[in-house]
Image (cartoon, rainbow, N blue to C red; front, side, top):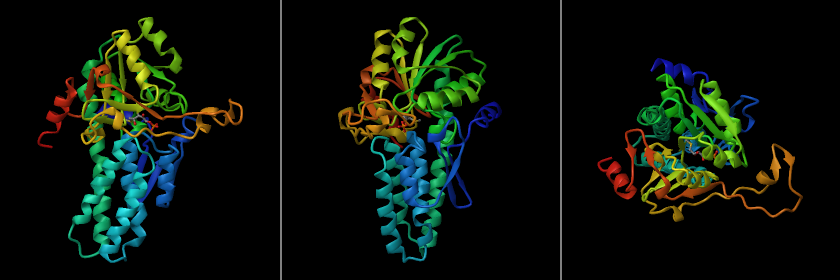
Length: 355
Ligand code: MRU
């Protein structure tokens, strides 16, 4: 694992928990500034998730788990029952920051399970919460590495790979999901090119993916979203791999706005379209993609580019942050332990059997 470690060491960590304090890399400042911001209150953590200082499905789950610890750490003198009620209240608050990535509510549910522990005092419960958040964080590292190992075999010499948004180390604990395949394949000395779509409106592709892949030593080329079709039509792309915020029971996949268009294009040009994710992103309680809550963001994010107004004041906007790719456009879902293929309802059910 030494070379992969050296690849990851060139990319900053998005989340750190040090001596009982939470630090988040402010991704809104990347790639120009690298600032680790200490999170003093639960309101600050909520806001960091809301405005995408920390973003990407696994990362917001991990950040919220630690955020819950931040929320209650000064309340350990409360009697356990009152402390438990506070934990429930703060978990619901953190869960309300963003609706689409299921990892956020998954992490909160996992933390809330600890409330059934039989403890003498609230301090013990607080310590159990911290341990659970650390466990979620550590597990994600192993999972991301596993996704890379499962998926790297799909990458062969000479390939052109398109990705959309940032499903990278910055969006997770380490290595990323879609990018983990790339880092592992690079570590195996495979030669390939990655095309990163810039990802309007918030430019996660340009600001984050192109930057982190470059730091990780990957041959990466930045293109605008509108160039995707041309790149496919001219034979530059052999595979698409993206991350996801939620996979549902029939295999429909929510990801950053624009992913659906890329998937339709890939189908048209006969290019395989893969989705990489940890099992914590799979929501078996939601039947199909129509039931995935899609976050609508402030129109100012599309009438303004990096602080510069580009549309007339008062212009009417819509800004859905995610779209849903129907399962029939998905060639496979790359998880930490296997690549699941169609029929997805059966494959996903089988995947969770006994877990
Ligand atoms: O709005 P964002 O930047 O949080 O959107 C992130 C994505 O769409 C990612 O592709 C997804 O969360 C997977 S991250 C491994």
